[in-house]
Structure formats: structure tokens, C-alpha cells
Length: 346
Image 1 (cartoon, rainbow, N blue to C red):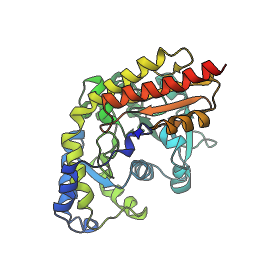
Image 2 (cartoon, one colour):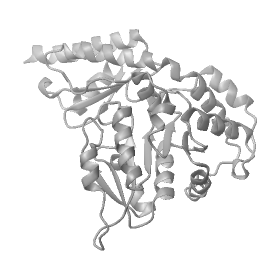
Image 3 (cartoon, rainbow, N blue to C red):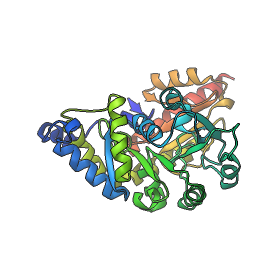
């Protein structure tokens, strides 16, 4: 099966499996797990932050950040199609008691003028703006890269207004690879950053939340409150270290495979590629084929290809290290077969 549903489906490499078996472990709630301690130290250095915290998932990392930065009754500005707003089950409202303020960006990027207008003034009728959240790469914008210049402009406004910035950098390494920049450069335009180890980097589980030492000290208690205090978690940190140190360099390959897929599908008369393919995500509109997304996905599955619906007429394909160029070529053939059969029937 050619699984293009998400880069979260990747399996740990053999080196990661060996590292899990051999990991030196301890009780992380007591800060005594050497593998987690080493991972946090390495991540903080790579991201250019004072300290870091291992969390169980990207969602947990984002929610710990919101809880640590904000107070109940305040307002958090985020992009209208961001993962935090769309896919985290309203956790920020349920747990932090905050009011989301969604702003529609351009290819996932909040515009400075819109942010300036959204920041609340001192008024008894208004909640305080406690946080601004960015996402890079932006999932629903098709893996779009938010440029360092755009991030810097937002960060400058927030610093002027004494508002912290949190970056959902679940796929930040993809953004860095596509921009030919370091993740440290991109994360310099935010106060805190969350990165996923379990997407394109291929670890079986886990994310990192990084920021100042004082922030991480407070965040660790919120992680505990959310059930994220692990005991012998080094068995997850060990493959996470390999992901962090050894898997980022190959992300260009995923981007090349996504570009090849997009180019070939764009040549199909009944298909339309909706996004500019910056990284490893391709959004394909199938509206002109006459198929529903559910039917198209079922036919794809019967042909040995998996993808996901991303809208009424949109299907998302995501490349990762387990997908080869041969897999991409076969997927293109299968998709063409389905589209061609529909055309012949008509």
C-alpha cells in the first residue's frame, strides 16, 4: 500500500528501534531520565532557546504553551485555518479558558496590518490579547512556508505590544529545508516553539516545546497537569534524538517527490492542484472528475493508494521517507487510471 495520508504514518527506522531497546532511562518526572535530558538539551541548542521540554504530541505542546502564556478570559490570535484552531478539539478554550481570535492569512501567513487591528485596546469591554500563534509550515495552506520576513514582521509588532508569540512548528524542519535556512533562524522570530519529532523526522512519538528557562519551568507543571509527566520516557526520547540529528537532511527528498506528484497531476485535465507546493503536501481538487471525495478515496484504496479528504472536493497527498520515487510514479498511474475511466464512462 502506498500511504500518502500523512507523514505521521512513518515507522521508526531500524536505528531508532535499536536506540529504543538500548536507551538509558530514568524517571522523567524527577528529571532523572538521561535520554530525555539529552534530547531536551540538544533540541534547545538546535532551536536557539534556553531550554526545552519533551511532550507527548504536538497538540500537547501547543496547549502547554497556551496554558503557560495565557490566563483564562484572555484572547489568543491565530490564523483561521491553523492546526490549533481547526484540529485540536477546542482544547485552548476547554483547558485555558481563552477566546480564540482567528485571522484569515495569505497562504497561512497572518498579515501585519490585520494583526495590528486585531490586538485589543485597553477597554473594559475587551479581553486582553495574551498571545499570538503562528504555524510553519502551514498544514491547511498545503504545507506552505511562512517566510522569515513575515515571521519577523509579526514578531516585531508583538514585541512592541508586549505580546508573546508561539510558533506551532510541527513541520518547522520542512520549512527550514525549503527556505535553505536553519530552524534556529526561523525560531528566532518567536518566544516559544513546538516541533514534532513524529512527522517527517520519523520518530514513533513525541514533540519538543522550547523557550526561555523560566517559561519551561512553568510549562513543566502544565505538562504534568495534562498527564504528560512520563516515567521511563527515554525509550521515546532515544529515537527522537535520531530524528532530530539525522533525519532533517533528507527532507528535501520528500519535497522533490511532492513536486513530481503535483506536476504530473496538474497535467491531468480533470484535476487541479490547489496549492503552490513548497514542501511535502499536495492538495488536489477533483471536482471536475464527477467523483465525490469519499468515492475517489475508495477507488484509490482499491488501487493500493491511501490519501485523505481535505475539503468537499479536495484530497491531500503527503510524502515522507517511506515513499519512494517509484511509489510516486505508481500513484500517478493509479490516479490517472481512475480519472481516465471516469472520462471514458462519460
